[in-house]
Image 1 (cartoon, one colour):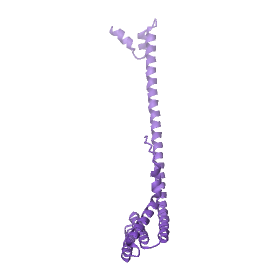
Image 2 (cartoon, helix red, strand yellow):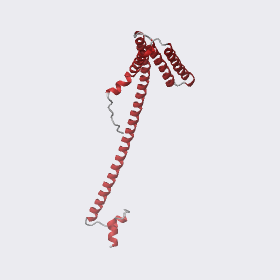
Image 3 (cartoon, one colour):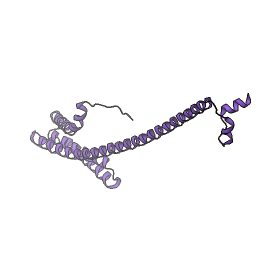
Image 4 (tube, one colour):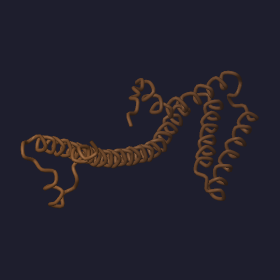
Length: 201
């Protein structure tokens, strides 16, 4: 029932929140590195990026339409957007258009991630509520069983105490002067062990 308490490092909480910005910044940096290595105004490189981005977008559209798989569709559209951002960052000579597209891509990425985070938080809350309800239910069953077992133990103790007191009373009564075993038997009471023992002797 007792689960270990795991304390996460602050970086483990901050990293998922920073992932969209890190991803778009990485694409922008790689695009600018590509620009510095000869991609600026290169028609061949631009055509390659256009083909790759169009293919990724087509794959995302196909996955969303025919397969209905939101994960593959999201991956395809994210790849298309990343390739488009890298193409603009690599092809353009200035930095203003790549920065504008980076800001736009980061905003869209955070918008999509926020939707996923809300869904994940909702599912986590529902799971924790379900676990809490089950724990309370099990705790209630355990309390009822403990009370029932305690009651049985108390009844057994009371029965043992009663039997001990009855035996003590019979022994004490038998020790009194003038006690007649025959009169007790004639009254229909059960035969006492001491009477049986005395008859045997």
